Image (cartoon, rainbow, N blue to C red; front, side):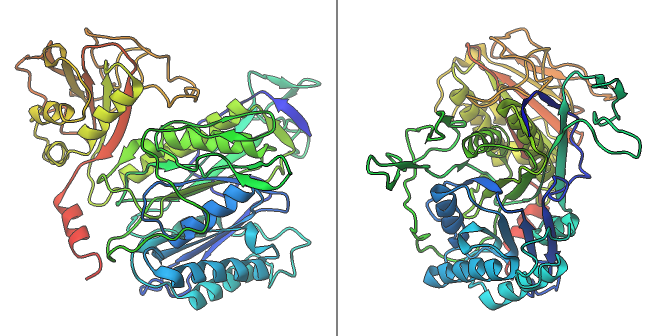
Length: 546
């Protein structure tokens, strides 16, 4: 086993899915949940010894599969199977929903050769409609056959690799395309392997016959999400040991979204970030009773073949999700089912530095989040809202989110209408104090994220990805960078609270729009990304169940 390897990752590759990391198999099947007959059940399987981490919706109304998976990971990182169904959220379905999840875990254990508590379950689709457990069970059996496991009899041997692309297809609801991405970590800054063997372009040394000599780690994943999309996910509380040696829940199981990854000590007892308005939960708690309707959700399943301690896996995923998924919004609607899972097989035999692994996980999450926005229901444009000078990162995020969720701003972007007063109106309602006479506002096209070194900061406790620069101070004279190949230069609309008279029509016309708002104070930049609001979004969501 390679210990503590210093690794660096290449660019994100959307050709890599959940089966790219060594040790994992996956497939997607149709089991009749979707009336269309399309693929609607995905199964991902890791080898014995796989460990897992997860982050989950902080909505008080929570689906049965979230209750199950959250409790499983709060109790132990020992999880090696993920079952995801689409077409039905299994949310607000009462005790029957919990029974369906339990039946799903038991059937998966029997078919795939594991224990029920090693099975994590996710669902996405219509809320408030009972999920047929028998159909799910039949789908799991079909998946087991496809993977060569046949009722668990193949548990002693590696399963067939399966079809990761089919798994990505099977978790879609209103998504128009499947979403996957991955990165490969290889030794950083190494030009030649020991003995002078040249490295392949991927950074892996190849001997005669193409055998890899230099260790590498892969992180990859699949995701879905197009609406009911404003994630605010957090990890479950982590169990600690009582003086008598028995299990106990860590003090205070309340959490708050958006607080960054937790801190872990050498014994792996995570101290979760605390917020001022957490949503408490307890293992086994139900999802409450709410009126049916709506659809969900954002889901992502990531895999890696890295050797990784559970505490480092939890920290890496929590920070990555907070800096990526938790900073996108399509409609301001946090789902009942939002879940991101990360499974590590250890099959590479390489133990990367935790920061390198966290960077790779964040890169994959960031790309998957962008794919969701590009596929937003009815969407035609992706909008990045950058805010600085709010005094704190939390303040900048609050203002950016208020602007990103504003229906008036989103419809103006759709129409290419440079009605910038709506941006300032929304900013002023975020509850963050600032001096309107010091405001500076610019709008630009794709790639115009700001002056050198002024990229938005990652969440507290995370490291910026390579090339993302460092934390800037106030930049009252900052301009958006010109965009190579973009005929519309960035436009300064407001300087020191006063309109410049410039016209941003051209900057608003493209498929990517950058809004950059400096509030005149100190503090870091933050970014929340969104999509425009279109008539097609209204149509889709006005007749989803009819």
